[in-house]
Length: 330
Image 1 (spheres, helix red, strand yellow):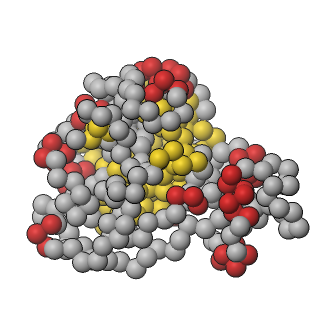
Image 2 (cartoon, helix red, strand yellow):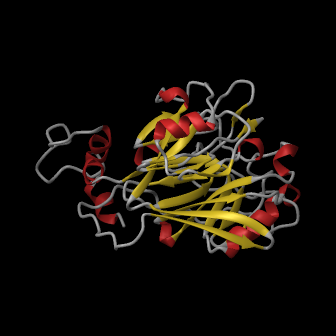
């Protein structure tokens, strides 16, 4: 059984999360659909692949990089945290600052203090016994793990332009982790294209404890893919009730994160939800620096990735992408 993890944002802004993903499947049997929501899912047209950004970076309009709001919807008290991915980006921070998912666990408070966060939230599942974090993990453009066998759930992936997409791994084509800057895998998925989409068995979730009423953390996408939204539920909604509330607040796509005893959320010095369990990682929200954006771009014409001013693994990979693909990038 996999359990949830906590998020943390630093004096630069923080949050908890985890990740993973995988292969497609065609049509799904009707008896695999979730309890009474939506019709039988079928294979949908593949979204365009995640491609490297163009050489020019669009100017980000003025506004707040992080917004926090308390709401009461359908009798549920929730906290909504909206993050502008053109200004701020998520990073995994692992227990004891190891830099790798080493199957260690640490208290939410300790990881929060180390990250000096303003915002902290729980992330993806991990094994209770083996402490193995679920799925593929990409942070800062670096792949930390990518188990080929784990195609459970859905993946929220962010490309190098700060645009997010969500893919249901058993029904949609898996993006290339090498072309992403961040990858979070969890589930079950609750929204797809602004509609409730709830088919946990199709996604590979069968643990009965997941479907009971519990405190919840969810992550979603809004603002044409440039806004990442975390939602903390302080009470005990069911997953179908959670899906409807996420739709009500205007998200286009959303999925469940680790909850119950792992659910945690803090904003500044205000702890909104305190987890009862220790975690394998948190997600720290950091500003997107101009230097970071530059290293995510291909080198200038006439130069190679190895001779450019700031060579990085990301720049080297993107230098090998055909010019035609670069021209097709959004």
